[in-house]
Image 1 (tube, rainbow, N blue to C red):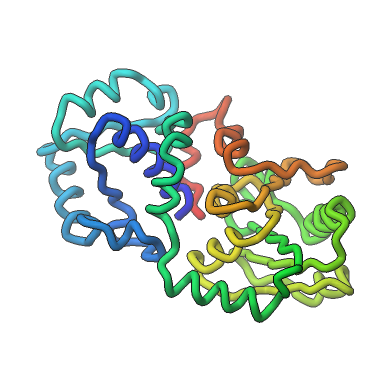
Image 2 (spheres, one colour):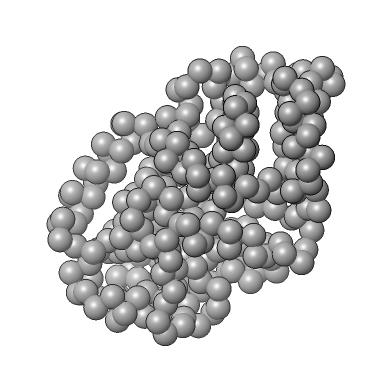
Length: 277
């Protein structure tokens, strides 16, 4: 989901700079959590028409993968046609992304029902004075992705959390644990006695909204936490090592955005196609 947000946002920013209109194929029919899904042409009919026309060569397809990610030829081909299908995980326009950052955030604002639900949950679980720390525990595909480099044990997550609590120096905080697998809640509650721990059970859109409203985020390298930090004030610490640094490196979205590419700087970008949030 979040890979698709970042992919489309780069295309959208480049197109806006060149006065072109865009439609997201993925958000025309899937991940119906965001404002973009309610905007013109984002529906199943446009999705099917686009897929059919591209498949039969009626409109050209421009692919951004690996070494072709920033080739001027791709941009020239897009500008030479009225309608083009753009695909590939490697499209990058960081400067334009930040130039149109406010527009991108508005496009991917959460639908009102989701935001109301999460705001109510936060009000019920923590006072307004509490520091809110979001913990993203990613397992599943991370056991094999990048050779398991970003797969961490519960104890390793706890080490990062304890370091964050020491560093932030705030005992009145609430920890929110979001994961793609069931967690051993008793283990975390026993290890972090005295702190307010919450384990929400929302869908991906609700979890993303919750993390976006936290003050700090901790988790392995992931587009999920990166996009969560895109919405507001949350500073993000990515777990690059199996032992936490002292101090932890919390950074805003603008700093983290280009760092997501790190695992692919010397490898084939096609690995990215198997990595989904």
